Length: 236
Image 1: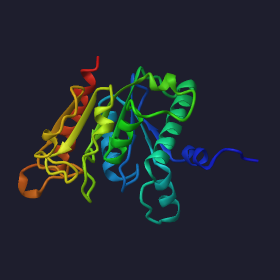
Image 2: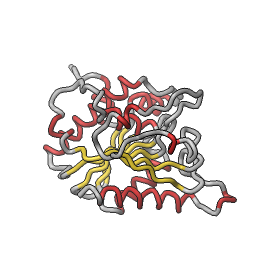
Image 3: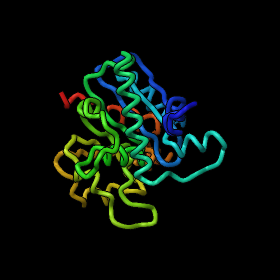
Image 4: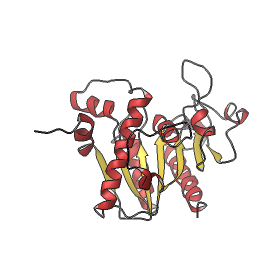
């Protein structure tokens, strides 16, 4: 009889640990509309591994369900996403115990929604639900948000609390034309001294530039990786 909750069974089959062991583990969370196998996620993972980082990717539960039956579900609400994120950290803890991961620090990296959840998980407002995560959380050294979703598409106040109420160093890599927060809007908000915002030339929410801009997607992704490399190197 299998007494494991459904989310534990699904997680075991829907995460990827890639790259040689490294002193830096990247935990890479996907955005709302595309899973961990999307070309963007796979390309960025390859580029991160090329920098010498080990990368752990995973799918949130709603995305696992989408892949299983082909239906397109919206993201779960934040409490369910964060509960699953905690389960991811439990899996990482187990892999450390098994010797599959041997890192000195963990960097939480997220595309859009994944970045917002990474920031929320580490904010001073958040109370963890699962016990036994102190050792893993003590290794989390910083947050990287690739296209932070500042403003919902339907409008409203910017989602600043996960950023402002956070003591960890944070890097936000944002396209200049990002419809969730562009180069005119973001500088008007106070994000705190622990947060750096680096801009990608003519990039949209996925850092894709217009053909007429003179920028390329490949160049923009490489620039994003270079910002991440510099940011991590400054952590010491």
